[in-house]
Length: 271
Image (cartoon, rainbow, N blue to C red; front, side):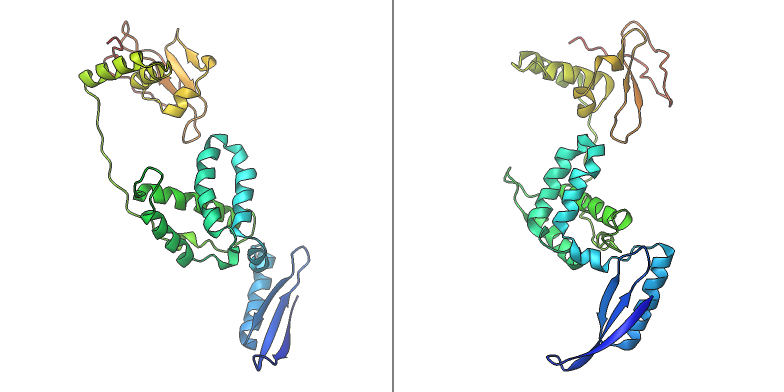
């Protein structure tokens, strides 16, 4: 149940109303008001939220800092996605250095948008200004942390990120290598002292697989007799089957959970 206690503050020379809500199974909720009517409305709304099972996070947001949320995200949540740990750690460490000391209750859209603009104008280690797409990756990493604070940890009632706009990203371009460019690329890979580029580039040209998919490839994923590679971990989390081009056949029967379109002519990797 809730109650309101009035007090007179001598320093401020005004009356205040300390509202309190206690409900079995939930942490006590406290808040101070300068108007009794507002205090009564808050008590009524808070009791209703608690009975519906909604998180009320005034105390939690004041108790935890941004650094607490980032550390919990990196140590607990990202254990499920180890391939994302390195990149997310790099992005979130920047936020931690800038606003890690700040309490979640103090984190506002204005604070985040100001740091977004700072990111956009900051020079990287390569002596370049960050692009809009890079800045948006920083925002996306912080947004994921704050979303968990709202949905799962009950440290926040509302995330400030939806009110923060993203920067415009470049359209990029779609370009394919010519036969001459492929030949020169393969010659450079063969001449390299590092033996990794040649097989990685060869598989990439033949299958269109991502770099992370190629470098984590295991022999049990490859079936040379049937002519396919089965990927268990992809970017979107779904399994995928990739056909291996062959000069002697135009197409193969590839077992897959989804339709796989074969190229009308196999790719000749002999340069």
